[in-house]
Length: 291
Image (cartoon, rainbow, N blue to C red; front, side, top):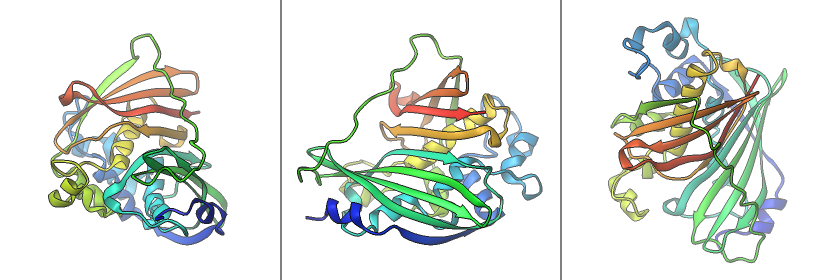
């Protein structure tokens, strides 16, 4: 069996050294749409609020950069764990949480410690749960919790795992905004380290059951957090404490995301849909906790 759940969860944690600098941060920010036109900004490439994402002398780091920092992709780390040998064409990102312990530095060296706390049996699929904890000489930086959905690998007799869903508030959202995904967005985003051909190769996408390449779920994840930071948190990335989501559907490059936000004390609940496909769900169970 490609997945040996007992072996994966009992394996010793793996450590990886990470390093990044301003170029990695800028590339990531460009990959999630920094400097691109939005309904709120008419001259985005020179807008001071956007230069905080793109100009090295003014740079701050969006917390979702943690998912690609130093090439230490949480998804890739999970797929290389002992006891796990799966086909990339069967893999989808199920969910993601980033918990920030302090603001991410523009340049850094750190150690990532990765483990597999659980492998859930969903019947027709398996869900690999991966935890990556990252710290530098000054202490903890962030923790990533990743859920990797692998089609066709369930049925091994394991626990099904949690299935609770977060209901949307019954009231209208406090804010709704749109973010257009460029046709080449996935090609730019993948340069930050996620080389899965599902996001670039039409033939591989067909093997995975899609008529064309799809956008990385973590790209949508970053686009959404940037929208929340820019519209609700005053552009202050340091206010983000944690950010969690469930990937509920795919996005195709060239589409437009509709991002609805409900503000509550210390948190923003978010729903993301594909505006071009009758509001098809994209991100669900999504919460940004903040100061």
